[in-house]
Image 1 (cartoon, rainbow, N blue to C red):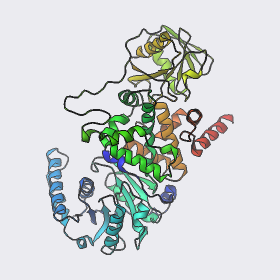
Image 2: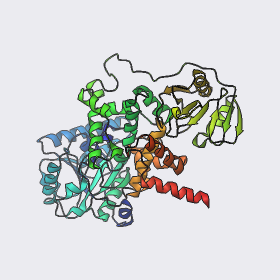
Image 3: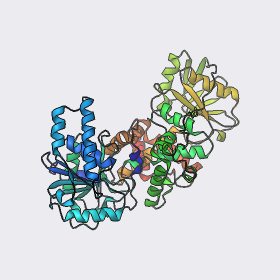
Image 4: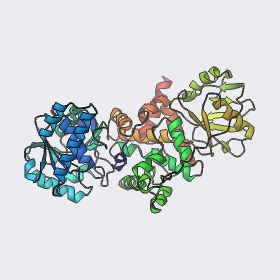
Amino acid sequence: MSADVSTNVTVRGSDDVTARETAAEGQDGAAVGPDRTVAVVGTGTMGQGIAQVALVAGHPVRLYDSAPGRAAEAVAALTARLDRLVEKGRLDAAAREAAVGRLHAAEDPAELADAALVIEAIVEDLAVKQRLFADLEKIVGDDAVLATNTSSLSVTAIAGELRLPGRFVGLHFFNPAPLLPLVEVVSGFATDADVATRAYETVKGWGKTPVRCADTPGFIVNRVARPFYAEALRVFEEGAADPATIDAALRECGGFRMGPFELTDLIGQDVNEAVTRSVWESFYQDPKFTPSLAQRRLVESGRLGRKSGHGWFSYAEGAERPEPRTEAPAEAPKRIVVEGDLGPAEPLVALFEEAGITVRRKKGDGNIVLPGGGLLMLADGESSFEFFPEEIVYFDLALDYARASRMVLSTGRRTAPETLAEAVGLFQALGKQVSVIGDVPGMIVARTVAMLADLAADAVDRGVATAEDVDTAMRLGVNYPAGPLEWAEKLGPRRVCDLLRALHERYPTGRYGPSQAVARRCAEADEEDSR
């Protein structure tokens, strides 16, 4: 995934424009045809990437930059990129020649007059962008679509001073634009539905996967993604696990492509922390978006990640990456008792039997009884120390228990070493690595997924985007193994809501209180079950 993924934050909020309404209206908005000129203002990495996408799609492309000579340099760089595509067999020589013939460096904004679509990718400064589009509006025709690739500003605010704000839209590409498929098509408060549809169809014709979105802090991806970082940081701050173990849990148990600590090191701790802080401030310091003090201290120390040579991990030459905590081999129990249905963890029963462990089923509340009498329970938002006199070992949620290469357990101080050893050996018998963390409510994967589901459902109910677009954005924009709403559906609304309520009881700050969207889904599921 791209470092740019976490640079999208709306500093100045706007009233939500319901994405569903936008989708329903203006369906006759035709894509900008390949014979029409696309202008790109700004020739940095993102500007060049967007220009390449439009160029390969067949458009005449004009590049403009206010710095003298930059546009010509960008044309040369893009030509070299096309040459590399030819060398790799991804573009034939004739197509390369045709593309180069359609690519021009504009030395004066007046050369953009015939553009049907202008996409801006310049510095993230509201006043600078407003001046740019005010000037462009005097140059291009009234039917031209004006678009910003802003990653940190309100689309509504940028268009606020325009004569025709209805033709203004956000097109948030993800870096590198030629490779990543997702584009968030952002409707500002004044964006015409027909214009949003035209922009949507245009980027779709370029081979991208567009999603519709209202102009709200974080758009889709960075609004919904905050818990992926925040919950890992909370677990670390509580001393329950180290960064390497938390990363391993989310990768090898949760199925995420990267762990949050290694990912923020890649993005840049300063960038990621600034996004979190800005989203939090844009939502008037809503506790669901509260930044991490630990990350703030890391930024203050200058440990910004890969770019500074040190973040959560060291990137100095020869530095060894810390290994996740992994338990030594333990003897597997020969038999266990499964009480009731294990819910999302039910596939474990067949895996235990395949491993030669005798499983006896009986009625109960969804627990595994170990030979020594200890209980093995799926993370539910409670802590093992709350149970007395039972000995409790919690295990974390997994996307796919068969494919997971690591299992994560947590215990309290009263849990006997023999009980923990039985639990460790049980999962090792399945070929899993096992990590043991501190007694933290909701563990790692379970609390992260519950919070992702909560913010995703809330975004849908507030009209930020459709459920399908939210899940698509999270899979494509940040490489999630499943959309948060899709995963929540598999878990069931009741389990998600109960987990959040349990966390809220233990952290009564409002951070974990279920949104009305989640509570409503839970009530509807209960009503359906009662019929």
